[in-house]
Length: 146
Image 1 (spheres, rainbow, N blue to C red):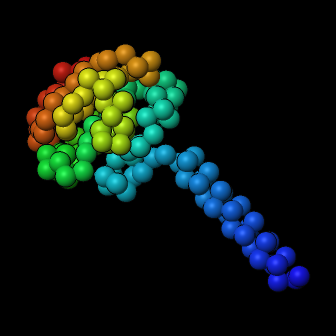
Image 2 (cartoon, helix red, strand yellow):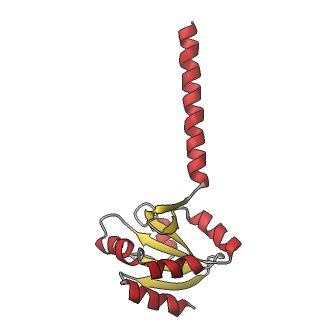
Image 3 (tube, rainbow, N blue to C red):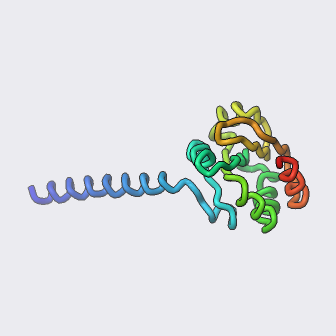
């Protein structure tokens, strides 16, 4: 009988611990390791809330696996220190995988990647960048938004 109680207590403890881990990871929806130097979010809803609070624009990076140009954007352009400085000053970057979130991509009329869509905290369209751009070109596009 004691062995059954011990097993039951162990199972309950395991569920409680796993629930705690899930809730902690949900609270912190930003990751500064995914693109070193940028604090990107994978939770668009949270990004929208934060954009309203901070009076910033959301920079939604539409991405998908096996997209060579998406990888180039993340590895070359979004790791550039000048690009990061410009983004961190005015934008909240969020990454959306169009294969995992086709409805979100469709809502923003995104059908190819990489596509970067800028929206206000009220979800009003601001600007869009289609395709890969090197750091200098990306900075020029950011200047167009101002």
